[in-house]
Image (cartoon, rainbow over all chains, first blue to last red; front, side):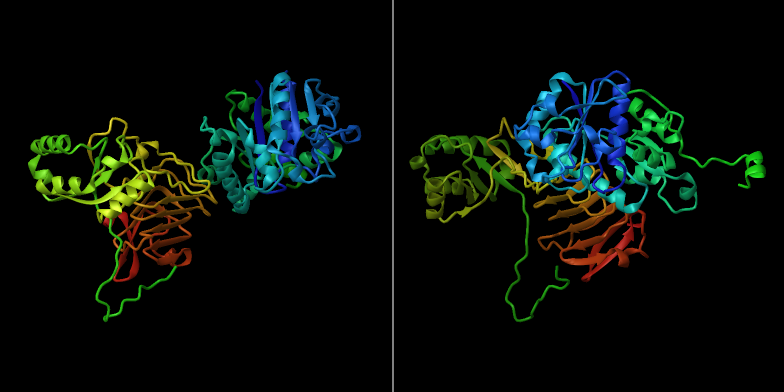
Length: 270
Length: 253
């Protein structure tokens, strides 16, 4: 049985797709057979970040409607060979995702995969609810600002009441907080909420803190999951997060402002 | 949400909501001689307790045929032992008709409290709705407090239609908690809290950290802006005094 992980947030533009790409790549890199599904029907993005947009023939909705088989729609990643992508349809609407249809696809994927990562669309409507319905675990992506935190709180409420686990009265969906776009300097200046602030408000365990970085944007534009930028802060932070998701204990990093050393201040004018 | 209750001096009475604890007699079958013998036996165990008590007949577990339900005989037998039958919790229409014929009040609900969990509110308090499985023949019932141990998230609503509401976790901004009685929040209260929603003016709100969007007691309310100077982010209680909401620190209560 595969473990189903939804990457969700409520708010848009906080880094769900970036996170889905990196977490699925990270799981696959560790040898777990992983598929990442784009639930954002109509606003397909995951294929761009995974650099497979030119290889999309069939999509998620085609499979649900029986126009294609799963094997026809799944795209094999070129960098990590245990990773597959199920792209969203760009020409349909979110209502094309039916609960039965999604269940059929997830059940079929469960037979062969270890992890199913569901990249949720923004919002709390049908598309987002379909993405989280079958989840065993949820990665709640949050930016350190008030509106993002409130939307995350809202989506946590929906996870606790409208997921399959909630409806069936099973153990609740396991929740993880992933704080993205974190800038310790701006936190020190009081322009951003701190990790402690967000943790205190949302009261769920912290999976990781991804520092704000130009590398993330560059990687996205190149169609590279940022976790593969192994030298970068953001890449390492995602790698830590995947390790923690798998139960490994790792100390949190990138949470404090780098003190500029004497020499760098002297020579770089910092 | 009106802030004042209109009371005119002309009125001969005013209707108030009241909740009382009643004893329910859960009837399995009815045969008058056996009934009276059982009743006498029960009363002999605690004669003081049963003197002049109001009683309701609960028919959820009734297994005999409805035609044997002679409410006049039940009332008469109870009367002889100074017990006053005031109402019936019926399970079907026939029973309701019979009860009405005997001028008894009809009470809603069954022994197992229905879960009035509104949309999206996970009921995490199975203990409060405990099934009275080996039900004693006579059970005393008070409106139990509803206890929630999970964070009440933005967009969720938790409602205690009868008694108090106790929340052992944060109530987040954008969440709403309502109770007929008092509300206790043992985490930060960041959302809206409405106590005494049926008009109980003695209801209060207690919280570990007052950061609420709105607090209301029996329709009188205050919004966040008006609470900033009164113990914001500290342990507070809110009560109604002379139609004015008053917030006071919990440690000086």
